[in-house]
Image (cartoon, rainbow, N blue to C red):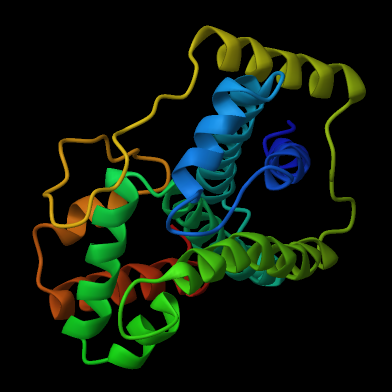
Length: 254
């Protein structure tokens, strides 16, 4: 019953834990990794807050997908509900984007590899100016991480706008779950964060090929798919998938 309200509550959990991490994070090439390491090893409860931030985001994405699937299977995405569905698709894309930017901020081997794939994609579809904008110049520099931090903070602000649009056409939206369910969910995530601390990959080393790392399926599935396609092929695939989701409210009901 609260599959739509739980992502909103978890979104606030991600924001509040992110504010805590922001106090100690330094967005520079030289100090980004060491600042994350400092949070994990020196700041009281820092490692747990990193885990809470990470697992709250994972839980948020899980419930977003459950919410989307249930709305579709119960046929509640047609007629006047087409606006919530379309804005929901936009919210899904924005959530995936802000989640992916969080991986860059650690500035470990995985971050460098993901950034290389991102730059390769935009250069491959002949939009090098986007690569230049993301990097803050022709090459990776301190502005790169500063801009990633900006995206990681600014995109959630955009999420609030689309969340308002998402709810405005629903007569009695359930915005937040009951207090008991909220406390249970937050407590469970804290337990998971304590039992399964987030792990480090190796620090980024220029000129060295990155080692093996995990592509988390919640926020990084498209990087995995991109590995089997050309940049143009991936652009066609992603565009077709997005359009297919956007036109679902207008197909003939079964």
